[in-house]
Length: 486
Image 1 (cartoon, rainbow, N blue to C red):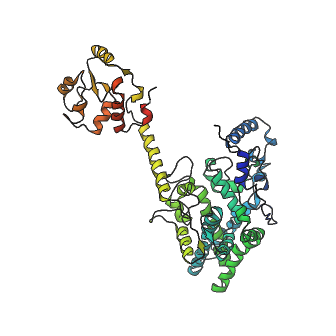
Image 2 (cartoon, rainbow, N blue to C red):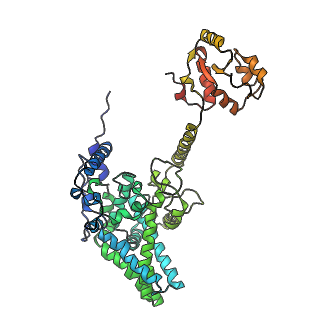
């Protein structure tokens, strides 16, 4: 019976949410940090990953041989005449120019930092940072838990204060990142280098050839997300700069200090910390769950990103409200979500089963062990040995008298006399005979190392003892595929 195949076009429409009538939410300031042309997907041609990769390679070769001036600006080399066309100027202003002004005034000493202002700036930094990690990321992007309106409003306002785009834009980009990790459709593809995944992707214009969409109908159904997106520029400017300056004026009579340190410099710091999730967390650290893609676990990134550094775990179990699963791993965002659940502000905290997590750990350990195993000589596999009948054994014994049988496998010990720990006489006494019982404790109960040495002396397997040979090899760790006769 032939099974009906899942239609890839329809499946990709579902993944992108194109099957739903979604609420249109505009902000009046263009596409913010994104590009409208990057999400206008043709599902008939953009729905098969194998086809996409093939087409990308074909287009790459075609563009390499075509007139550079006819390519999209992202595929043209930088020149004195076109360098400015490569830049996403809105993002450049938000993540380079404005923070640069703050760094100049702060580090030059024109606006000094005192203890009270430092504490206030760090507090404001934490509120904005946790709004990104707990709100933008774990709540909205991954739906790892639910949150009531007061908490969502807190995340929306203080998330805007971090100047990283609206919830709608941020969540959509991040879902695309998870859908297309380490491909040309990944907005911050780590394979393109540390700088690109850190900031370069945001400061340069994206190539519409690599457009992609993800379903964000659940985000646009949230009135708080719609409100924040429509009024993002005003909310961002007020919460990021004006509000902290007013608070500093009220508490410390230091409007400039609040603007520079709790505003401009804080924004630069929190942006750079968040960018590290896209760059450092795909470059530095371990991969205890899977190594097919770039995400890694590393405590350094966790320290500066409120616990988001355990990125290998996160990419394997994205809807888990935790990033760190061990008690000693730093993940204040996990703690904050748990505490708010106890206060009745969040609910339905999702966790993957411990069994699924342990399976991933074990499978990755097996992968690493198999790589190490492949570097060593384990002797000829049973399946690759010639099969001898009893008559064949007798004939070969006449040509080479240095043959011994152990567990149905014939071994040539001609080069092992000097190295045998039991002495040459014991080996000679076993020539031409079945030494299985002697090997397995009749004379010596041989070590694991002895089994490995013996495997490198294999030359044949007896036809009538194939099952015995397979069981013997299995005790050494050889897998079932090694027993299949070719």
